[in-house]
Image (cartoon, rainbow, N blue to C red; front, side, top):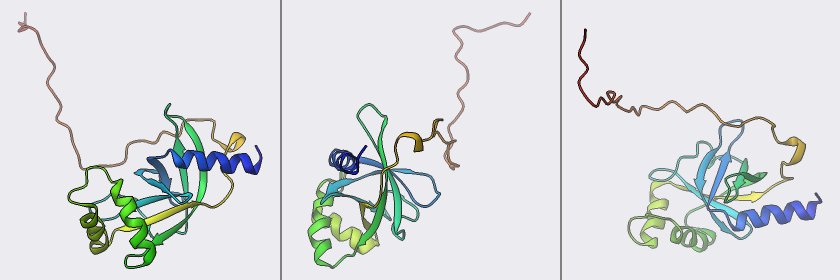
Length: 167
């Protein structure tokens, strides 16, 4: 693939993205809802929003986008920049991202105000290098074991159609 084709692939995949898998440093990737704007993906993370450990402070991340079929389309390195509340950039971009937020309580203006007050991070993920493709992709599964969680699930007793008598 030429650089032009790779750039077009990343651009087209970003335009259709609503979820991106984002990893910081050597950490695991997290599925995050995102909004494509201005040739970048925007993600909100912080209190009351999605968890993306280390993303708000990072300079670089890796982004994986998948297609409708569930398979990976492209993985690319991203330059990470944080949009600061109170700036003109925040006033322009935060309402656009907030309008796309599903299941948000209140109006978009209330949501954006809460993001600023609670210290949430609005992060821009812009392409920052050559996408990973072909021979560079791992041949095996990228499945990871489940992460530790305090959540438990009660074990159900087996279903029996009738009472079994001992002999």
